[in-house]
Image (cartoon, rainbow, N blue to C red; front, side):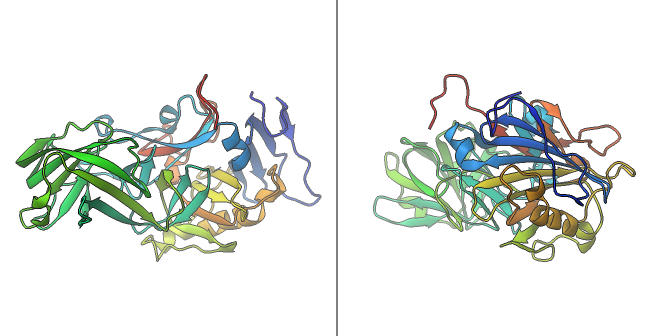
Length: 390
């Protein structure tokens, strides 16, 4: 057990206010600024698992949030405990769309690289400085030439239509191992390779028609243009261009992001935005196992939440209204920060709901077969041995 908020390596049992219907919550301190709470709410009954991060303190200790994702060759899914190997803690992430190229429902960014573009659902992002933001994001993607021509891209990691420009990076997942289009450009990054809410210089290495193998290394990009997208014919080998990717609303350089939905808390008020995010009302109203992310009004305390469900007599699961009310009104009863969530959104739940702490699944997944494989997860990671602290 690691040192935590108070530097003590103990299991803390909190004494709460008289009349509260919480059983004896237990708090395990995992690292500076990171704690795990296990709470029994008698009125459900519900078992709720919460990882609480004091973001300024955790960031100062070198602790970071990271997304992890299952690769296509592994069927597009892995267990959260596998994705989280070696992490301090983790929760499952976004919904999965199963098809020839299985993918998540919403935005995903990993280590500053775009993996999945934003959709019309909420996503959680964290900046390089450790600032959280939940929003429905819009994306602007493209490149600027040395003569300040701006070529906007219409797609990402997919083959272009006849009048489209599409950008591929080294995370490209396609059913075939090559790309076919009228014209393509291989770009090599110069220096920093993270383009999320940033601009990166790149040199045009090669221009060729018809087809290219997808053998991109980190820091390389492929631009593929359809036959009717003629403007890019002015780009030549050796040119230096500027790649950009803006995720709006922008707040600094985004390093990690993960999708889900719907928003359940907006500015301290319960806001179950299922219609806006194209989810069913029954999905919101029925009780299920749930996974969620929220943060405090001062944006300094982050909560990762997993609620067990579908287990009568043990934990019955929550509706989104119940989940939102719990995060808005009850987290302060046991959190070390004494804060509640002010903004929050839902992630994939049901049999996917999983929380991992120190390589152990700490909740009770509802599937009879146990932990369900998922497309991605959000991890809390400690610095590697010898890694420089910020």
